[in-house]
Amino acid sequence: MSWRPGSALLSTLEGKPPPWADRFVRRVGASVHRFGMIRDGDGVLAGVSGGKDSLALCLALELRRRRVRDAYRLQALLVDWDDAPMPVGTLEDLRAYFDCLGVPFRVRPASRSPRGYLGGCYECARMRKMELFRAAREAGLGVVALGHHLDDMAETLIMNLVLHGRFEGMEPVRSFFRGEARVVRPLCALREGSVRTFAERMELPVADFECGIAAKNPRRKAKALLVELGKIDRLVREHLFLAYAGRRSGAFPGAAGGQEARESGARESGREGVHGNP
Image (cartoon, rainbow, N blue to C red; front, side):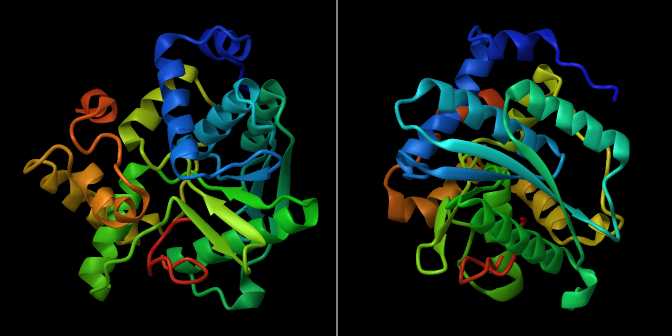
């Protein structure tokens, strides 16, 4: 194990967060409240990949849990594929991180090959999410939290428009299995740059591990296109999300030049879009 908590993380966990960390957590909390993601008495299972997004998500949800009246349980789980296992050293760092947070963390070994895995990102994402659903059901947890940020939301909408002619994206909140499970995306209003900066300043143990076929994912082209569209209007991410999710949920913070824009300057199981990440 090589990871040790830094001073910013330790002070934050002691209830003395630096202003930038407090702003991040409050923005996450604003999305949770706005979209009704987590309710009093909920059990939440956060999907962990080892990347910056899921680690930042877990920290923000734990910090929020400590300060709000709504009482909810939080656990974290990493799906570890047998054909692409997470390095042992990385798992040790992740366990140390979640021990520091006081969040129960489990590693769930799983196999993709018996269920018709074709090697694509969509199939992998779908299978990972189904493993999360199974684990949540086994643990009696009704909410699965995923680390998709604002860029992911915009990129998914672009891919579905360009590749499939469908105005479909990822929802901030989505119910499955007749309401038995609920998927939430608390980072949906935060740009990727803000999440990255938060993870770096907190010195989170982000895994240096990338899938061998990630370079073939069409999301990379959508990301590049999003950068070009940002040259037309710097709020393109906010506007794309507002066009899809905001039409159902009211005004979207940042669409008229909010704090997030200034700082950063899938088909799901069901019908949430053809493309999406776990």
